[in-house]
Image (spheres, helix red, strand yellow):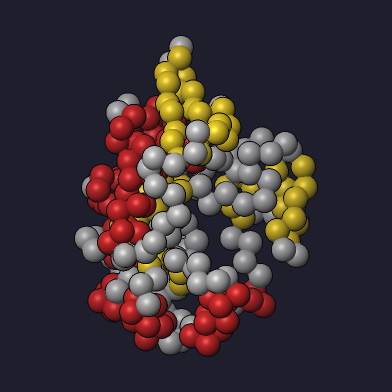
Length: 247
């Protein structure tokens, strides 16, 4: 991704505490690589504080993934991405997370980070109740072509569903919106709207509720309408009776 190398560090509970205080206690989910120094103990502490721990950007072996899940990790962040390009056929972090039933998994359904065929296999491994759709959207997503900034990093938005590093043309994030991810899985797999929407909305909420994490909006306060017109799904979203967008 576009994470700066100089920002990488070992698991640091004191640093997290400072960040949590700066955020007013609103950090609800932390993604980490379980193989970094101090990660397993850090996972245990986060879980005690009712913060969901997700595994991501990891090259951990099967044993380390197991230790992380035993410590309380319950999610995989954009599984299939942010890992080594070459992996052992048996002992690798993707297989270890796919086969762990205590882990839900989030997937980027943009057709680029994972091909539809690969995503289909991953979805079958996780089963519908443990699938979560995410965008990995970054600066430039749902925006015109051009250059954008994320922190000190410069990003390039082209026509593809990804954001690129303009120096290397390497993908550093996605350009899709979540409603497009829902449309994609409906079109790729001829699946019901209700199931696709559950991956984007209901399953994430269930995960938050399982960790007793407080959410800001009730189902009555925020509503999304889906309507099929000429084989295309149209979307409207409203909060407290006021329309937010129409697509």
